[in-house]
Image (cartoon, rainbow, N blue to C red; front, side, top):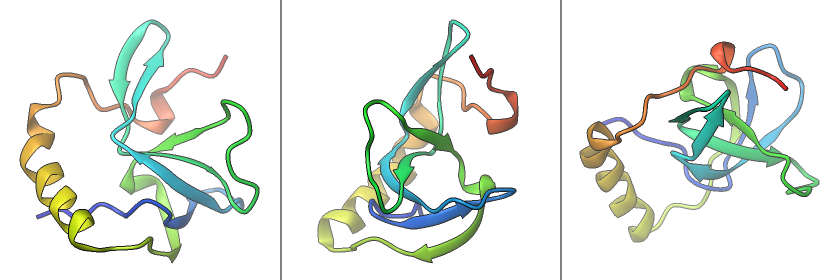
Length: 102
C-alpha cells in the first residue's frame, strides 16, 4: 500500500528552498484547458494560505520531509480509501514539469 503524507506535513520540493505545508490530497487542477490532478496541494509555511496561491506536486517531487502531519484512526482509514480508489480517478495525473505557467 502506498502511503500518502498526512495533511499538515511540511516538505521541500526538488530544486526548491521554500517549506510547503500539505493542505489537500488529490486536488483537481486545470492546465491549459485540460483537467487532471496532482497528489498534493500546499501553501507556503509558515505564512499559510494567501488568497488562491497554492502549489501542486506529486510525491516524486518531494526532496525532504521536515514534519509528518497528524495521524489518527480517520487518517488511517483515509489512507486505505486512497489506496483502493486511486485507480478509479477519471482524470490524468499531471507532472510538475509538464504544466504550463501563465
